[in-house]
Length: 159
Ligand code: HEM
Image (cartoon, rainbow, N blue to C red):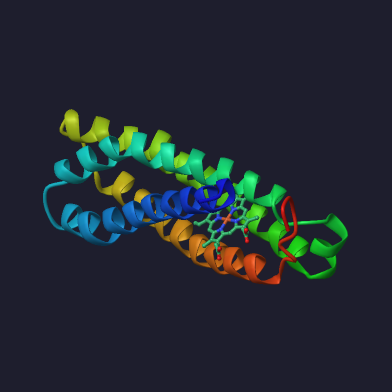
């Protein structure tokens, strides 16, 4: 068992927890909230935040570690992995910014509406829209992750 493999495992488990949790919330819990009682969704979205953001932090940190294991820079650039990695990094920044807007702006608005008997329609719609964008970005990011992994020379210590 190498550190490199463990970090790759952390990277993938973190991605599964973040994106899987988001997909469950938005495709299973959110439609029910929009049809009826928004309270269970508001509570789930609030309670999911620590898990989500721990997973995001682990994915990003392990991602940076993965970059250090890709091998010599010229070969990474020649193989095309460098460009794909740059694109992936840009999309991850956008996805994290949107996820933060959802969790730290829209979810509190939803929470306040639910607690004070206000109208939850607008924040529920906003959360749904933001989630769809993050899920679409995640599809591309996962593809790019796999492509980087297969295109890169994978040098580094011990190889
Ligand atoms: C700053 C953020 C990130 C960085 C710097 C990063 C970096 C990397 C690198 C360098 C690899 C190649 C690892 C290797 O071949 O040894 C990789 C693989 C991968 N990444 Fe990321 N990543 C980031 C975020 C994400 C996110 C958010 C997701 C998913 C939502 C993701 C999903 C994947 C997947 C599926 C692989 C393929 C693993 C494999 O085939 O072995 N990454 N990442």
